[in-house]
Image (tube, rainbow, N blue to C red):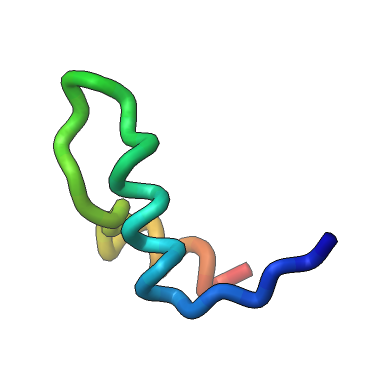
Length: 40
């Protein structure tokens, strides 16, 4: 069954499943990584 959830609900769910000992928040790649990916 497909569930169409809003992004805020997904964010709350991901926060609850984070491994113990890791910092919370979204991954922000370094600008060098983004520049490389954009050049592909």
